[in-house]
Image (cartoon, rainbow, N blue to C red):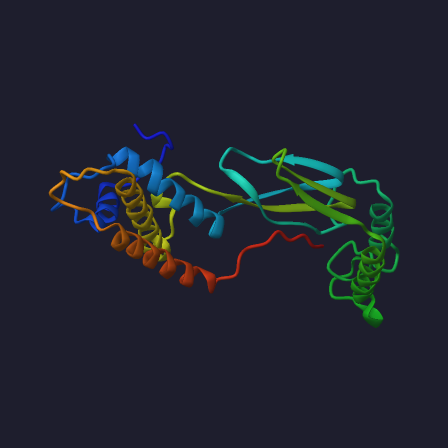
Length: 251
């Protein structure tokens, strides 16, 4: 039984083992479950660190919040930002919330219908446009004095966010999976190569430790090492051209 809980189809597992001439050679040092634990699992970890699964979460914020990671498969944050500040209906009573209410409900900008003063199509001297102008002025003042901070507390597995005004908090979590099918189609061949490299390295390590002069068949350790390094280098070259995802926060 696999200790890592990795799941993989028989076809993909066979493609990994073919690097050792499977199925012509069916007697390998590692069992299928061992391959899952010592070859597939570390390769999946490398993949999801580079290409994490994205999970979005949206909620309101007013003040400081401590948000725990949603589940055991969440390992970080890809993006966290506070948007629509001062524009959310509700019980916000911060300074900028009150300013926004007063600004957008002023006599010059309030409307009771489609046109000014409730008259359809009535817009004397561009009166309705004053609402947008007042909103732009408010947003400029708000950006100067609003404080938004966020950081990831990896030790306690939580996101800490602070906003001095009411807004919507948008979080994109970074997650991994133990299911090989969660690997994207365009990167599946790369992960198979990483698994093959791990398998070759393990065989080479085992052969370098074993010593039996009575063996009729010897294992070319250097050839295994070279092949494993070549596979890893090809994947590393392909992935290095893609920028890593970093944690961002913005208004």
